[in-house]
Length: 57
Ligand SMILES: [Zn+2]
Image 1 (cartoon, rainbow, N blue to C red):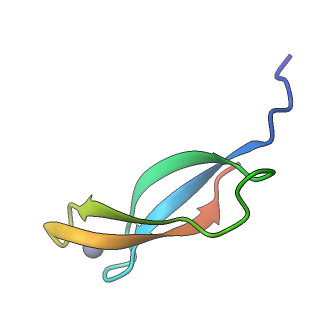
Image 2 (cartoon, rainbow, N blue to C red):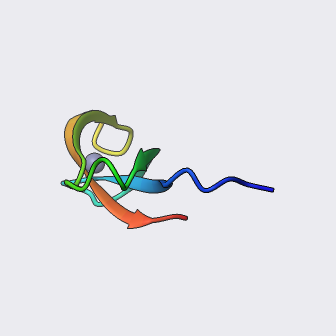
């Protein structure tokens, strides 16, 4: 039985090309702000700002 931890999976999408390059989990109970991270985008081949996008869970 899976316990309810409050963590959800979200996608991180590149701000430029909109492709979802990363999937991270976060605790929605503790962190309510949208995630914004600088990560490498395979499509742009550069470090781009990635924003929280659709919930996967
Ligand atoms: Zn990109």
